[in-house]
Amino acid sequence: MIIRGRKGFAFIFSISPVALQHELTTISLDLTLRIGGNVRGYGITYNQASRNLCRFTEKRGVDLKKRFEGNVVMTIAIVLIVLVSQFRLIDGYVENYTDESIKRGAIVFATARGINALVSMAQSTTVEVGFIVSGSVSIGEILDPLNDLIERFSFIMTLVLSALVAIKILLLISAHDFFNYLIVVMGVFSIAVIYFNRRKEAEAVLKFFTIVVFIRFSLGIMVALNSVVDHAFLIGEVDTHEQNIEVFKDELELDSLDNVEIDFLKGLERKVESGVSSFLNLMVIFVLKSILLPLSFFFLLFSGVKLLWRSNILKIG
Figure 1 (tube, rainbow, N blue to C red):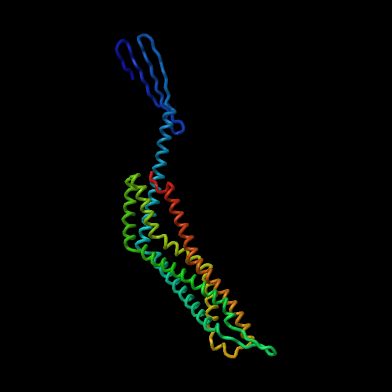
Figure 2: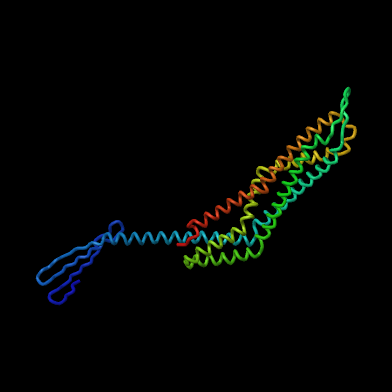
């Protein structure tokens, strides 16, 4: 290409494809500047510029592909959350487990109070023992350690039952239709801002959606995890110790205190020791599965949501 100007100036441009190297097009630009009778030539090769452009295009394509795949994954997750909320897939299970836990706790509490009443009635009973030197032994002295333990056990079970009832109420609140409708609305809104590529709005909307999901499902997941641990490790121990205290209550009848002998007192001491052991184990198990484990699982869920909040997962683009 020749461009002629005034006073003998002429610019000569030539652009030609030379070769394909590493899937890149090498383009050379030859510039010949003719000023009057003098000719000066300049050669400029745009290999590096072409290579940088191709790299930028490839990188941009990879970024767009990753963004699209991330948007698809996030959309699927939002849809699944909405479906689980609307069909209440875990609500029935956790409510039944909570009701069963309250029922079992109430039965154990009633059994403990019944034993406490029997022990209180038997504390004034004395037994004459001895052949050469006679004496008397108060049954209340043998039952006193068990009586003190049952008082503390009753207080602990009151806290346990209060915690279970509180969890039951919070589960009913979190499963209310208000939160189900709110999750649907925020889910649709979140998908919309994702695919319309509204980055500023998307981050805020997704964070608010995360808060709503946490309120809706955190207690249910907490109770579900707690039930897994309970059925895997604790329920067998609870059944055994519940049976022990039921047997102990049946044997501790006032009729059995008539015409007792030394052998009876020795047997009663062994039964009291077994009862103390069963009450201690039940106390620890109920505190663990009704208070400590739920709080631990809730803390883990809260920490996970907080980590998600601070990460780049909720950022679009």
